[in-house]
Length: 483
Image (tube, rainbow, N blue to C red; front, side):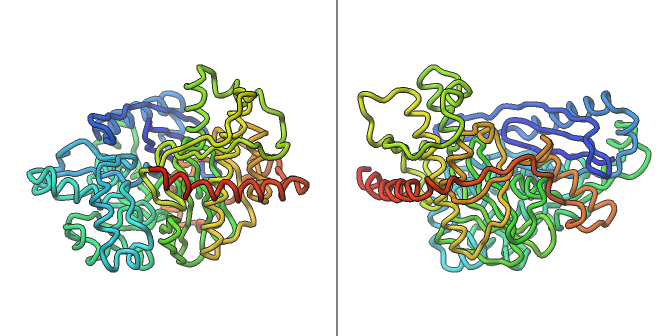
């Protein structure tokens, strides 16, 4: 039996599977995010430990015999978070999360440092880990002086599970301290960020062993045999493992709070200027690239809050299929934008509002705007040589047929809807545990799900969506000029 743990921003999800990937038990535990100042986003790592104790207790209670046969644990986690610990493993301050924007100046300075793009393969975004430590060095020097280790969120949970300082390549690639091509810490990047190699955890591949469950926990959980903890993965790499998106041509589009267009790569092909993320995959000799937009379903949720409506009701008022682009344009930059603009200050807009328009027109424009933003990511990814043979549609927004048909036609790509519901990062983590324990090939374990349905582009509408997309692209520089 294998336990997949996915440490998200709002909670921890656990699934217990057998070696065939059948889910036998699952549990979730929520925790809060603190925003003590504008732009700050923090969590107490102790909340992660309490959540893990909660979900393990629930899984044990639901499937005691299966849990008693546990052989491996896989970890997935929110990326980029800075968890600072001292020489006694005490947490020095709340973890600074991926969506914390306080280190804009420090990120800009690191990004402008010669050699950083070549080493990391990425723009140094404010959300990455390295600029957070530069901020701590400047604003909290007494804390910075005590930092013995910097751990990503899932790796702090690993420390509690195993007592070891270990991370995997995919998660570490989002720190701006890793040489993503060489899959190792970069002494040069660490020096630029004021850090040392001894402050970094040991690195392993995500599908390799990354520690063993502590004897005290094994005893408390009623386990008799040793339990291997896999290297694990950052959340998007884990999600890719969960749907079998490992190599060239395989990928997914996620309509979640943020929007992600991701593809596996058999080679390292970074393009920092495009604001595409180029990271190590969770399995050896593979990488992945993704375009990220910061507000996908979050845009619809914002509209629903503003109108005093339910997002499902707004979505349900639209037709089943796309009927052609609206004359109303929506720019979904409610929290800034990553791909392709790398602009934390840009904000959203409606363009072309008319007195005759109603909430349905606004909803339609929001969904189209998100689709156009994801096409920006597709264009950027294709510019690196990425191809898309298979593109699975996942996330809460994929429940809207109108949104799916609009997106398929805007991207001019068929979207596959996977059969089954357990395809996320927790499943990917469990699959990584299977590989770590059994030595099985990731390609054999991380197979794609069966396809429930394929949403094809509407060929009669692609030209009109192309024209609308061109108008959408022209709006960003005009909006930027107004700042």
